[in-house]
Amino acid sequence: MEDMNMNQISDEEFMKQMEEGAFAEETEEVVSQEEPEKTSPVYPEQPEQDSVNTANDEDSKVAVKEEPKEDGEETAESEESTEDGNSEDTKTKDSDSEDDVLNSYLNQVSKVKANRQEIEFTNSEKLAQFDSMYQKAADYTKKTQKLSQFGKRISAMEELGMTDDQFNTMLDVLKGDEDAITSVLKGAGIDALELDTEKELDYTPHNYGKSELELTIEDAYSEIDSDDEGVVTRDVIANQFDERSRSQIVNGMTLPNGVKLSTKEIMIGIHEDVKNGEYQKVSPMMTKLKLQGDGSKSDIEYYIEAGAQYNRQKVYMAQQASKQADEAKQRAQAEAKLIADTKAKQAQRELASQDAEKRQSAAITQGTAGTSGSPDQLDTDKMSDEEFLKWMDLQMQG
Image (cartoon, rainbow, N blue to C red; front, side, top):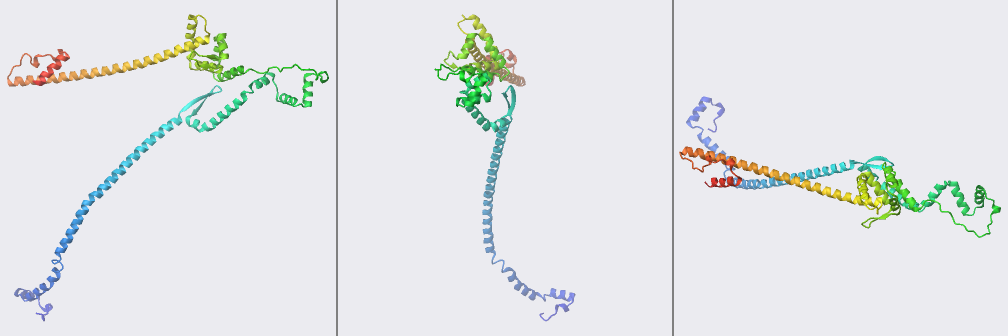
Protein backbone atom coordinates (compact mmCIF):
# COMPACT_ATOMS: atom_id res chain seq x y z
CA MET A 1 0.00 0.00 0.00
CA GLU A 2 2.91 2.23 0.68
CA ASP A 3 4.18 1.66 -2.91
CA MET A 4 0.77 2.35 -4.45
CA ASN A 5 0.52 5.62 -6.20
CA MET A 6 -2.80 7.12 -5.26
CA ASN A 7 -2.74 9.40 -8.23
CA GLN A 8 -2.58 6.43 -10.65
CA ILE A 9 -5.85 4.81 -9.38
CA SER A 10 -9.09 5.73 -10.98
CA ASP A 11 -11.95 6.91 -8.93
CA GLU A 12 -13.88 3.69 -9.29
CA GLU A 13 -10.92 1.59 -8.20
CA PHE A 14 -10.28 3.90 -5.29
CA MET A 15 -13.85 3.64 -4.10
CA LYS A 16 -13.75 -0.16 -4.46
CA GLN A 17 -10.58 -0.48 -2.46
CA MET A 18 -12.05 1.80 0.18
CA GLU A 19 -15.02 -0.50 0.53
CA GLU A 20 -12.73 -3.54 0.84
CA GLY A 21 -10.81 -1.83 3.65
CA ALA A 22 -7.60 -1.48 1.84
CA PHE A 23 -6.85 1.76 3.56
CA ALA A 24 -8.17 0.84 7.06
CA GLU A 25 -4.83 0.20 8.66
CA GLU A 26 -3.44 3.37 7.17
CA THR A 27 -6.40 5.33 8.43
CA GLU A 28 -6.04 3.88 11.91
CA GLU A 29 -2.39 4.78 11.94
CA VAL A 30 -3.17 8.28 10.87
CA VAL A 31 -5.82 8.58 13.53
CA SER A 32 -3.61 7.03 16.18
CA GLN A 33 -0.86 9.39 15.27
CA GLU A 34 -2.96 12.53 14.96
CA GLU A 35 -5.22 12.07 17.97
CA PRO A 36 -2.52 12.43 20.61
CA GLU A 37 -1.33 15.57 18.90
CA LYS A 38 -4.84 17.00 18.89
CA THR A 39 -6.07 15.75 22.26
CA SER A 40 -2.95 15.71 24.38
CA PRO A 41 -2.79 19.53 24.72
CA VAL A 42 -6.47 19.70 25.66
CA TYR A 43 -7.62 16.87 27.91
CA PRO A 44 -4.67 16.53 30.29
CA GLU A 45 -4.77 20.28 30.84
CA GLN A 46 -8.56 20.45 31.26
CA PRO A 47 -8.44 20.55 35.07
CA GLU A 48 -5.92 23.31 34.86
CA GLN A 49 -8.22 25.18 32.48
CA ASP A 50 -11.11 24.59 34.87
CA SER A 51 -9.05 25.91 37.73
CA VAL A 52 -8.03 28.83 35.63
CA ASN A 53 -11.62 29.40 34.62
CA THR A 54 -12.68 29.04 38.23
CA ALA A 55 -10.08 31.54 39.21
CA ASN A 56 -11.24 33.76 36.42
CA ASP A 57 -14.82 33.24 37.55
CA GLU A 58 -13.85 34.19 41.09
CA ASP A 59 -12.04 37.18 39.75
CA SER A 60 -15.08 38.00 37.69
CA LYS A 61 -17.28 37.58 40.76
CA VAL A 62 -14.95 39.81 42.70
CA ALA A 63 -15.04 42.22 39.85
CA VAL A 64 -18.81 42.02 39.78
CA LYS A 65 -18.95 42.59 43.50
CA GLU A 66 -16.55 45.45 43.26
CA GLU A 67 -18.38 47.03 40.36
CA PRO A 68 -21.38 48.10 42.46
CA LYS A 69 -18.94 49.68 44.88
CA GLU A 70 -17.35 51.56 42.07
CA ASP A 71 -20.79 52.42 40.73
CA GLY A 72 -21.88 53.35 44.24
CA GLU A 73 -18.83 55.45 44.70
CA GLU A 74 -19.44 57.08 41.39
CA THR A 75 -23.10 57.54 42.32
CA ALA A 76 -22.14 58.96 45.67
CA GLU A 77 -19.60 61.17 44.01
CA SER A 78 -22.17 62.20 41.43
CA GLU A 79 -24.69 62.84 44.22
CA GLU A 80 -22.11 64.79 46.10
CA SER A 81 -21.29 66.69 42.96
CA THR A 82 -25.03 67.16 42.43
CA GLU A 83 -25.44 68.30 45.98
CA ASP A 84 -22.45 70.56 45.56
CA GLY A 85 -23.97 71.74 42.32
CA ASN A 86 -27.28 72.39 44.04
CA SER A 87 -25.56 74.16 46.88
CA GLU A 88 -23.57 76.15 44.39
CA ASP A 89 -26.77 76.92 42.51
CA THR A 90 -28.43 77.91 45.78
CA LYS A 91 -25.46 80.04 46.70
CA THR A 92 -25.54 81.55 43.23
CA LYS A 93 -29.26 82.29 43.56
CA ASP A 94 -28.73 83.75 47.04
CA SER A 95 -25.85 85.81 45.70
CA ASP A 96 -27.98 86.98 42.79
CA SER A 97 -30.79 87.86 45.20
CA GLU A 98 -28.42 89.84 47.41
CA ASP A 99 -27.02 91.58 44.34
CA ASP A 100 -30.55 92.50 43.22
CA VAL A 101 -31.33 93.98 46.64
CA LEU A 102 -28.05 95.88 46.67
CA ASN A 103 -28.55 97.18 43.13
CA SER A 104 -32.11 98.20 43.97
CA TYR A 105 -30.85 100.15 47.00
CA LEU A 106 -28.02 101.77 45.06
CA ASN A 107 -30.42 102.90 42.34
CA GLN A 108 -32.94 104.43 44.73
CA VAL A 109 -33.29 108.18 44.21
CA SER A 110 -33.80 110.73 46.95
CA LYS A 111 -33.98 114.49 46.89
CA VAL A 112 -31.73 116.93 48.71
CA LYS A 113 -32.92 120.48 49.16
CA ALA A 114 -30.30 123.22 48.86
CA ASN A 115 -30.66 126.89 48.00
CA ARG A 116 -34.42 126.36 47.54
CA GLN A 117 -33.75 123.74 44.88
CA GLU A 118 -34.36 120.01 45.06
CA ILE A 119 -31.49 117.99 43.62
CA GLU A 120 -31.87 114.27 42.97
CA PHE A 121 -29.15 111.83 43.95
CA THR A 122 -28.99 108.05 43.83
CA ASN A 123 -27.64 106.18 46.84
CA SER A 124 -24.76 105.08 44.64
CA GLU A 125 -23.85 108.72 43.96
CA LYS A 126 -24.13 109.54 47.65
CA LEU A 127 -21.82 106.69 48.60
CA ALA A 128 -19.35 107.64 45.89
CA GLN A 129 -19.24 111.23 47.18
CA PHE A 130 -19.39 110.35 50.88
CA ASP A 131 -15.67 110.62 51.63
CA SER A 132 -15.19 113.93 49.85
CA MET A 133 -18.47 115.40 51.16
CA TYR A 134 -17.69 114.29 54.71
CA GLN A 135 -14.25 115.88 54.46
CA LYS A 136 -15.77 119.08 53.07
CA ALA A 137 -18.39 119.13 55.82
CA ALA A 138 -15.73 118.61 58.49
CA ASP A 139 -13.57 121.38 56.99
CA TYR A 140 -16.60 123.67 56.71
CA THR A 141 -17.53 123.07 60.35
CA LYS A 142 -13.99 123.76 61.45
CA LYS A 143 -13.80 126.96 59.40
CA THR A 144 -17.23 128.07 60.58
CA GLN A 145 -16.25 127.58 64.22
CA LYS A 146 -13.08 129.54 63.61
CA LEU A 147 -14.91 132.38 61.87
CA SER A 148 -17.66 132.54 64.48
CA GLN A 149 -15.37 134.39 66.88
CA PHE A 150 -14.87 137.08 64.25
CA GLY A 151 -18.55 137.38 63.46
CA LYS A 152 -18.98 140.64 65.36
CA ARG A 153 -16.02 142.28 63.59
CA ILE A 154 -17.18 141.08 60.20
CA SER A 155 -20.68 142.46 60.83
CA ALA A 156 -19.15 145.79 61.91
CA MET A 157 -17.19 146.08 58.68
CA GLU A 158 -20.35 145.20 56.75
CA GLU A 159 -22.33 147.90 58.59
CA LEU A 160 -19.65 150.54 57.91
CA GLY A 161 -19.15 149.37 54.36
CA MET A 162 -15.41 149.12 54.92
CA THR A 163 -13.37 148.29 51.85
CA ASP A 164 -10.24 146.18 51.78
CA ASP A 165 -8.06 149.33 51.33
CA GLN A 166 -9.65 150.98 54.34
CA PHE A 167 -9.16 147.87 56.43
CA ASN A 168 -5.51 147.60 55.44
CA THR A 169 -4.98 151.35 56.09
CA MET A 170 -6.33 150.99 59.62
CA LEU A 171 -3.97 148.11 60.24
CA ASP A 172 -1.08 150.29 59.05
CA VAL A 173 -2.25 153.06 61.43
CA LEU A 174 -2.19 150.61 64.33
CA LYS A 175 1.37 149.73 63.33
CA GLY A 176 2.37 153.45 63.41
CA ASP A 177 2.79 154.03 59.71
CA GLU A 178 3.03 157.87 59.41
CA ASP A 179 1.78 157.92 55.84
CA ALA A 180 -1.23 155.85 56.85
CA ILE A 181 -1.90 158.18 59.80
CA THR A 182 -1.57 161.25 57.59
CA SER A 183 -3.90 159.68 55.04
CA VAL A 184 -6.50 159.02 57.70
CA LEU A 185 -6.22 162.56 59.15
CA LYS A 186 -6.62 164.12 55.77
CA GLY A 187 -9.50 161.89 54.93
CA ALA A 188 -11.21 162.87 58.21
CA GLY A 189 -10.39 166.61 57.75
CA ILE A 190 -8.32 166.83 60.95
CA ASP A 191 -5.33 169.19 61.31
CA ALA A 192 -2.49 167.38 63.02
CA LEU A 193 -1.26 170.67 64.62
CA GLU A 194 -4.55 171.02 66.45
CA LEU A 195 -4.16 167.68 68.14
CA ASP A 196 -2.94 167.77 71.74
CA THR A 197 -1.00 164.59 72.11
CA GLU A 198 0.08 165.43 75.69
CA LYS A 199 -3.34 165.72 77.30
CA GLU A 200 -4.80 162.81 79.24
CA LEU A 201 -7.12 160.80 77.00
CA ASP A 202 -10.59 159.68 78.03
CA TYR A 203 -11.40 157.49 75.06
CA THR A 204 -13.58 154.36 74.89
CA PRO A 205 -13.91 152.57 71.54
CA HIS A 206 -17.40 152.41 70.14
CA ASN A 207 -19.07 149.02 70.03
CA TYR A 208 -19.57 148.17 66.40
CA GLY A 209 -21.07 145.08 64.90
CA LYS A 210 -23.95 142.82 65.87
CA SER A 211 -24.16 141.06 69.21
CA GLU A 212 -23.67 137.33 69.53
CA LEU A 213 -27.41 136.87 70.02
CA GLU A 214 -28.20 138.88 66.92
CA LEU A 215 -25.72 136.83 64.97
CA THR A 216 -27.36 133.63 66.26
CA ILE A 217 -30.79 134.82 65.15
CA GLU A 218 -29.38 135.87 61.81
CA ASP A 219 -27.76 132.45 61.36
CA ALA A 220 -31.05 130.72 62.19
CA TYR A 221 -32.95 132.88 59.73
CA SER A 222 -30.38 132.18 57.01
CA GLU A 223 -31.05 128.46 57.48
CA ILE A 224 -34.82 128.98 57.58
CA ASP A 225 -34.79 131.17 54.48
CA SER A 226 -33.17 128.38 52.47
CA ASP A 227 -36.64 126.73 52.35
CA ASP A 228 -39.75 128.03 50.62
CA GLU A 229 -41.62 127.79 53.95
CA GLY A 230 -39.15 130.26 55.51
CA VAL A 231 -41.50 133.16 54.79
CA VAL A 232 -44.27 131.48 56.82
CA THR A 233 -41.91 130.80 59.73
CA ARG A 234 -40.74 134.41 59.78
CA ASP A 235 -44.37 135.55 59.88
CA VAL A 236 -45.17 133.17 62.74
CA ILE A 237 -42.26 134.40 64.87
CA ALA A 238 -42.52 138.09 63.99
CA ASN A 239 -46.31 138.54 63.81
CA GLN A 240 -48.37 135.60 65.05
CA PHE A 241 -46.56 135.11 68.36
CA ASP A 242 -46.84 137.80 71.03
CA GLU A 243 -43.96 139.93 72.34
CA ARG A 244 -43.41 137.68 75.36
CA SER A 245 -42.92 134.74 73.03
CA ARG A 246 -40.34 136.61 70.96
CA SER A 247 -38.47 137.52 74.11
CA GLN A 248 -38.42 133.88 75.20
CA ILE A 249 -37.23 132.82 71.76
CA VAL A 250 -34.41 135.37 71.87
CA ASN A 251 -33.30 134.46 75.38
CA GLY A 252 -33.94 130.72 75.15
CA MET A 253 -36.34 128.80 77.36
CA THR A 254 -36.73 125.67 79.46
CA LEU A 255 -39.48 123.15 78.67
CA PRO A 256 -41.73 121.67 81.38
CA ASN A 257 -39.67 118.46 81.27
CA GLY A 258 -36.50 120.40 82.10
CA VAL A 259 -34.98 120.42 78.63
CA LYS A 260 -33.26 123.70 77.77
CA LEU A 261 -33.62 125.07 74.26
CA SER A 262 -31.39 127.68 72.67
CA THR A 263 -32.66 130.45 70.42
CA LYS A 264 -31.70 128.65 67.24
CA GLU A 265 -33.19 125.35 68.43
CA ILE A 266 -36.55 127.04 69.12
CA MET A 267 -36.62 128.79 65.75
CA ILE A 268 -35.61 125.68 63.80
CA GLY A 269 -38.16 123.63 65.76
CA ILE A 270 -40.98 126.00 64.79
CA HIS A 271 -39.76 125.94 61.19
CA GLU A 272 -39.80 122.10 61.10
CA ASP A 273 -43.42 122.15 62.34
CA VAL A 274 -44.30 124.59 59.58
CA LYS A 275 -42.63 122.43 56.93
CA ASN A 276 -44.25 119.13 57.96
CA GLY A 277 -47.69 120.71 58.42
CA GLU A 278 -47.96 120.17 62.16
CA TYR A 279 -48.01 123.90 62.96
CA GLN A 280 -51.27 124.25 61.01
CA LYS A 281 -52.78 121.49 63.18
CA VAL A 282 -51.40 122.66 66.54
CA SER A 283 -52.06 126.38 66.04
CA PRO A 284 -55.89 126.11 66.47
CA MET A 285 -55.34 124.07 69.62
CA MET A 286 -52.97 126.79 70.89
CA THR A 287 -55.61 129.47 70.26
CA LYS A 288 -58.24 127.42 72.15
CA LEU A 289 -55.92 126.97 75.14
CA LYS A 290 -55.15 130.68 75.10
CA LEU A 291 -58.84 131.60 75.12
CA GLN A 292 -59.53 129.17 77.95
CA GLY A 293 -56.47 130.25 79.92
CA ASP A 294 -55.96 133.09 82.35
CA GLY A 295 -53.33 134.86 80.25
CA SER A 296 -50.44 133.80 82.48
CA LYS A 297 -48.64 132.09 79.62
CA SER A 298 -47.10 133.35 76.42
CA ASP A 299 -48.20 132.18 72.97
CA ILE A 300 -45.22 129.91 72.58
CA GLU A 301 -45.92 128.31 75.96
CA TYR A 302 -49.49 127.62 74.88
CA TYR A 303 -48.09 126.31 71.60
CA ILE A 304 -45.81 123.88 73.42
CA GLU A 305 -48.73 122.74 75.61
CA ALA A 306 -50.95 122.27 72.54
CA GLY A 307 -48.13 120.36 70.84
CA ALA A 308 -47.97 117.94 73.77
CA GLN A 309 -51.74 117.37 73.51
CA TYR A 310 -51.46 116.83 69.79
CA ASN A 311 -48.73 114.22 70.26
CA ARG A 312 -50.81 112.41 72.88
CA GLN A 313 -53.74 112.38 70.46
CA LYS A 314 -51.53 110.93 67.72
CA VAL A 315 -50.37 108.17 70.04
CA TYR A 316 -53.96 107.46 71.11
CA MET A 317 -55.19 107.40 67.52
CA ALA A 318 -52.37 105.06 66.53
CA GLN A 319 -53.27 102.75 69.42
CA GLN A 320 -56.95 102.83 68.47
CA ALA A 321 -56.12 102.08 64.85
CA SER A 322 -53.96 99.15 65.93
CA LYS A 323 -56.71 97.92 68.28
CA GLN A 324 -59.34 98.18 65.55
CA ALA A 325 -57.09 96.30 63.15
CA ASP A 326 -56.62 93.53 65.72
CA GLU A 327 -60.37 93.36 66.39
CA ALA A 328 -61.12 93.24 62.66
CA LYS A 329 -58.61 90.41 62.30
CA GLN A 330 -60.20 88.52 65.19
CA ARG A 331 -63.69 89.01 63.71
CA ALA A 332 -62.49 87.75 60.36
CA GLN A 333 -60.95 84.70 62.00
CA ALA A 334 -64.15 84.04 64.01
CA GLU A 335 -66.28 84.38 60.90
CA ALA A 336 -64.02 82.04 58.98
CA LYS A 337 -64.22 79.50 61.82
CA LEU A 338 -68.02 79.82 61.98
CA ILE A 339 -68.30 79.26 58.25
CA ALA A 340 -65.99 76.25 58.44
CA ASP A 341 -67.94 74.78 61.36
CA THR A 342 -71.25 75.37 59.60
CA LYS A 343 -69.99 73.68 56.45
CA ALA A 344 -68.70 70.75 58.51
CA LYS A 345 -72.07 70.36 60.27
CA GLN A 346 -73.91 70.60 56.97
CA ALA A 347 -71.64 67.91 55.57
CA GLN A 348 -72.35 65.73 58.60
CA ARG A 349 -76.09 66.20 58.14
CA GLU A 350 -75.86 65.32 54.47
CA LEU A 351 -73.90 62.17 55.35
CA ALA A 352 -76.47 61.32 58.05
CA SER A 353 -79.30 61.84 55.59
CA GLN A 354 -77.61 59.58 53.07
CA ASP A 355 -77.01 57.00 55.80
CA ALA A 356 -80.68 57.19 56.81
CA GLU A 357 -81.79 56.65 53.23
CA LYS A 358 -79.51 53.62 52.96
CA ARG A 359 -80.89 52.22 56.22
CA GLN A 360 -84.47 52.78 55.04
CA SER A 361 -83.76 51.06 51.74
CA ALA A 362 -82.16 48.16 53.60
CA ALA A 363 -85.15 47.89 55.96
CA ILE A 364 -87.64 47.86 53.06
CA THR A 365 -85.58 45.24 51.27
CA GLN A 366 -85.53 43.03 54.34
CA GLY A 367 -89.28 43.56 54.85
CA THR A 368 -88.94 45.17 58.23
CA ALA A 369 -90.87 48.22 59.33
CA GLY A 370 -89.12 51.13 60.92
CA THR A 371 -89.67 52.16 64.49
CA SER A 372 -91.15 55.46 65.57
CA GLY A 373 -87.62 56.74 66.12
CA SER A 374 -86.27 55.63 62.77
CA PRO A 375 -84.27 58.16 60.66
CA ASP A 376 -86.96 58.29 57.95
CA GLN A 377 -89.42 59.77 60.44
CA LEU A 378 -86.97 62.40 61.75
CA ASP A 379 -86.41 65.84 60.33
CA THR A 380 -82.71 66.41 61.00
CA ASP A 381 -82.86 69.97 59.70
CA LYS A 382 -85.09 70.93 62.62
CA MET A 383 -82.74 69.46 65.23
CA SER A 384 -80.51 71.63 67.39
CA ASP A 385 -76.78 71.00 67.18
CA GLU A 386 -76.79 69.10 70.49
CA GLU A 387 -79.77 66.92 69.43
CA PHE A 388 -78.20 66.29 66.06
CA LEU A 389 -74.83 65.21 67.53
CA LYS A 390 -76.57 63.00 70.10
CA TRP A 391 -78.65 61.44 67.35
CA MET A 392 -75.53 60.90 65.26
CA ASP A 393 -73.86 59.06 68.14
CA LEU A 394 -76.88 56.75 68.43
CA GLN A 395 -76.82 56.10 64.70
CA MET A 396 -73.10 55.25 64.80
CA GLN A 397 -73.65 52.89 67.73
CA GLY A 398 -76.62 51.24 65.99
